[in-house]
Length: 121
Picture (tube, rainbow, N blue to C red):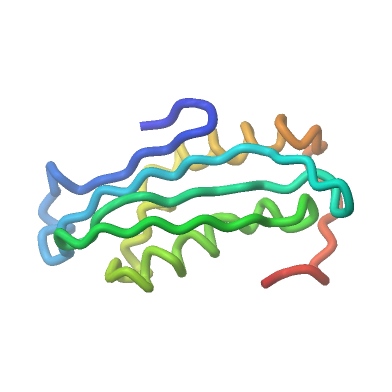
């Protein structure tokens, strides 16, 4: 479920193809913060459970690589037990597109704006 600044993913009502995955519930909270030296930064907080184990992590991405948030979030979720192929970010791509558009708007970025890949983590 998407609302600006927040995306919730879970597999509580797991369809057949997701029954082999551990149960998970993950919330992605994001906002733009102004760093005096770096400029706009995407701040993201992931909070959730995978197979009954709670986790919470935060990270920041420079404006130039903010649109790589899904890759970083997938790695964090995998570190806490969610298989990368079951990424809660990519499931339900229509909501992922809304997050992407919301981040673009919050950063005042233009579609197709070149991205500097020198800062990728």
